[in-house]
Length: 107
Ligand code: AMP
Ligand code: ZN
Image (cartoon, rainbow, N blue to C red; front, side):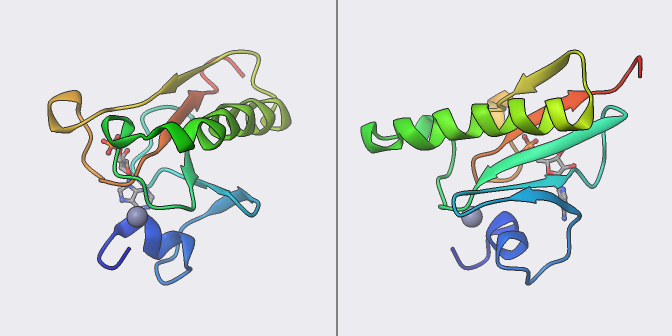
């Protein structure tokens, strides 16, 4: 979507440190990390938030979680947090669905 920060990152119009991507998902480093490892796991399709999910999005949500698990394993994390901020009241600032992967405190 035009004027969406994460769509621009996915389309390589804005630079981010992408650590993994496939046809459906991109994973890149958070620009302001809240943990030693802080990645954003992002569907390439523009979905605004968890509140905007429709029934046809079940598969992409599953893929987000399995991708977070794979990237966490490949990063060597023994434990981690997965967080969705949902809506402004839930702390969501970027209106393109994303899963925060946080870890690396005791590596
Ligand atoms: P949220 O508050 O859940 O919407 O999270 C948005 C996240 O995007 C925050 O953790 C920001 O640090 C991160 N962020 C903002 N701009 C960029 C950027 N250009 N590249 C990577 N991460 C970003
Ligand atoms: Zn977007």
